[in-house]
Amino acid sequence: MLEAEKVNAGYGKLQILFDIDLKAEKGKITTIVGPNGSGKSTFLKTIFGLTTVYSGSIKFKGTNITGLPPFKRTRMGMAYLPQTNNVFTNLTVMENLKMAGYILSEDEFRERLEVALSVFPDLKKILDRKAGNLSGGQRQFLAMATAIVRNSELLLLDEPTAQLAPKLADVIFSKILEMRDDHGITVLLVEQNAMKALEISDRAYMLVSGRVFYEGSPKPLLTEEKFRKHFLGVVEELEVVEDGSV
Image (cartoon, rainbow, N blue to C red; front, side):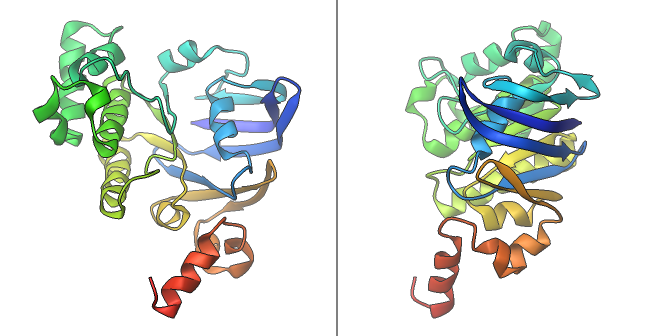
């Protein structure tokens, strides 16, 4: 579904990513973890065309998209949901969903809307509410629902559970699994809750200082201390839990 080869990228003259090789297989969840400042979010932005690519290539469904603007990537079936500003806060929930399906025919939109609301039924009760008045969880549901309305094949998710309560974060993870299992959506995930994200992932990458430090099965990242020590705060969190003092 997605393949990045020797990607060097950043912002203007500031290089953040160095020789990144990454593949996201169709119908799988691929998670990128690493300490703060490692380039995880920058990589998602690079895939969506929001950074400067100095060299290397990005292929989506076999097509080289390295020089394409974001709107063309969207029309090809890619959706990017940043951690913040991922919905139109001055529009209602329904208006946001309609904006997501603006290139669809009326019949196509109704069909995709039905699918989106089947995945996120809580939105049915708040279709007329302004997105700016939604809770953090509701806003994340809406953002993910817009990707379904667009019939996206690849979903780039940047910190979808940030600042959410643990129970609500678990719901978000279950929805990600549902989007993969029931709707065949390929997911490339950057997530601060690294342990939970790796548990639901098919493949994992760790970035450290803008470079790929590890790629492969998520299991070693969950079990081997030499990898876990690179997660900012993860080791400390585990020590607190093991001590029994939360």
